[in-house]
Length: 342
Image (cartoon, rainbow, N blue to C red; front, side, top):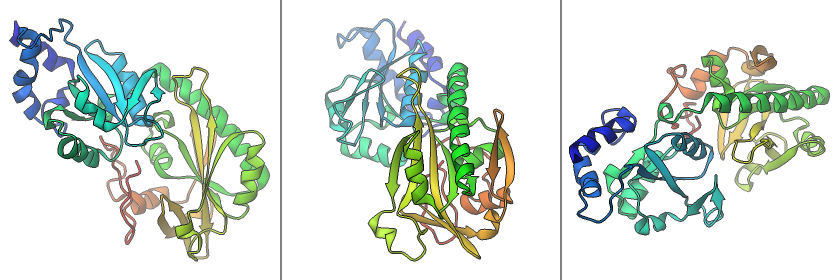
């Protein structure tokens, strides 16, 4: 009976969770009898006939929420809570679930800590080395294991179109040059749906970027990100006080993801174009921003940098066209600190 349930559980969680495809490899399946047999033998008093795996999700960001929505659709999983290192979100609710400090794991009853999104290696070290979570209970989630529902992509895609049209109209009226950047440029080049991603990134000519922020305040939900003091006096910093502007269109349903467009100030010089991301300077040939190519997303025309494949190779390396199964894509610009971005 117990072995039959073990086999059923083995097929209920993605196969990559047991062998090869995740950091757990085959270890979880080999040790699963130790973990699961007491739950069905009655020896511990913790009998759970449904055999749902009790899951805690580490972090509360976009990818964590996406994982939660997917796991809630599965009859073999029960999401119990989120945990996050940020004290500002601890004690709040996300998708109706409590957000706890990671230390609370010591007192929780759970089977698996799921870790979607970026910084998976660092979070795994924290869980195993600092919090004493057995390694076989840490699930480094892969993108293919928690796909969004088709209806979710349709709704979010429609919201993105509305926000993009409004944003592009303002940029055109302001006479500011702009281009799709970062993971959004990757998505378009790969033929992926932008609704899969947390936001749409646009680079905007830094000339007039501060005035643009004031213009956007009138009709958008806006968050401004000034250049940090550590880079403000750097001569390579674009000539604007504001480094990025985030525009949000709230969803019709509170548990859905908002549409987000992030604008980044780019200084386009005679030879180099420069912009800052997370206090990291990106510097590429200005020729990429000397004009514009175009792509289309759900009927919206989007401007791209010139020679986008070459730019993507500069930013992400020669294998940029192959989507990663984890979120730890890295900038590959020579001389720059590596930064997880896509």
